Length: 419
Image 1 (cartoon, rainbow, N blue to C red):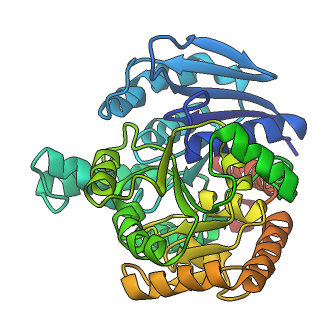
Image 2 (cartoon, helix red, strand yellow):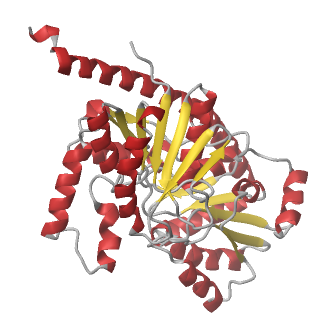
Image 3 (cartoon, rainbow, N blue to C red):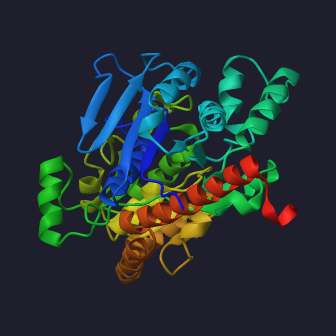
């Protein structure tokens, strides 16, 4: 039986671009190398200053045109990845596409032409259904129900369904894949991972030192959100709740770590305007996009995650790994992670009063906060460590690759059970 040893990860953006999907792709690439695989990464050159070919440890990264940050350039990568996948065909046995909504088309087509194995990983909800495109289409004054759009999605999905396997990062994503016609037998649920050696609790003295380093108030209880500052994260509601919380509690601060970036849903400017208009400048801090998220979490006391749509929630897992008590909405991938009052607290989407009362309770009940934080850390260690998740991918790759090899032999010589 053949053994898979060479992996190509195809992803729209990759390190040093900072984001959840980028971090996961990098962690997986490095983990696979540690497990004995050879890994190459194909991605788009999102900035002119980036090298077209770059080595990160034992991972080789190829950056392809079109160059620049514009959203529509992801469609260009669909075209430029085709000849590159052919050119580099001897450097991989299996293609893993991270975020397949556009570039998955190229990977599936090339895999069929070259006889390679192809696995598609959904980084977000809406990738297969097409809902992910809704806001982008709206900016072009188009509707997802438009006939041309529906025809494109139908044709695209017909191609994508020919992949050898799909990875769903949560049960919500797996359900979406099935509703879009993907055979449940080829769907494997593997969550995203967290580096539990990087994201870990710290002592009180270390926390004070981090606050001094980061310019955060040393005596305050700090409530933190990390992630993109985009409209579907529920941050406007968070600021409304915070306005009431800071009026009741002394020496508290809200820390927002992240930026709106190039995301089409960017609402960073609106959030800052709200803070200014409501006199919250003294208690709300914007850290911006940083590469030391773990230090901000370790300097914090509580974590809030009021998102309205979340395929998985890596920010939530990172906070839990740091031993923080967490409050989150009951949505998408969060349902696979949290158990109410066991390793976190759950609130309804958009429920102002419930959100306020829950945050107020955790700021008041230090025993409950500490207990939830300990349970959160244990969950991260036992279910989401990078080592555990990389091993699950390793097992999947070997199983799918060998299954695909058997199918190719049957295609060539016929299935003996049918003779």
